[in-house]
Amino acid sequence: MSSYDQESIVYGIIRDIPAGGELEAYRRRRTNWSAVQELPSSLDDDWPFLSREMFSMPGPDVYSGTYHTQLVHFAASYNSIEYEWERWISRFEAMLRTMYWSSVTVHLETELSGKHTFSWESTESGHNPNDSELKMVCEWERESNFSHRR
Image (tube, rainbow, N blue to C red; front, top):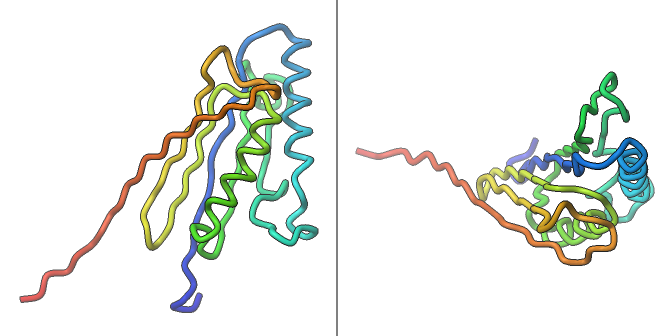
């Protein structure tokens, strides 16, 4: 890595609504799976910073990783994604609008500006694809190591 490269790490989780019957849960999980599959492939997109390859989700039942709540997890390593962060968030929220979820957490770790945690919480019994309003909260943590000269 050259001295000009600044690595940024993005990771997080989308939590489905842990309610409803088996058929409703199956419908929600299929909708969420489709939302991820609608993302472009990192190989096909001219802006590959939010792609389907960075997402993963366990299977639909308790034996494959889903007890009551489906968890969609994601992670990626970038070269200075903070300079494209508004665009990343915009595309991420566009995907969230098409999904079912109760809460979402995104962690951004940067070498230059510290750690950021972005959270979305649903206002009612969970976010539905028809809901258009999203509210995000950001927390910032900065660590610095100062060396003292004598």
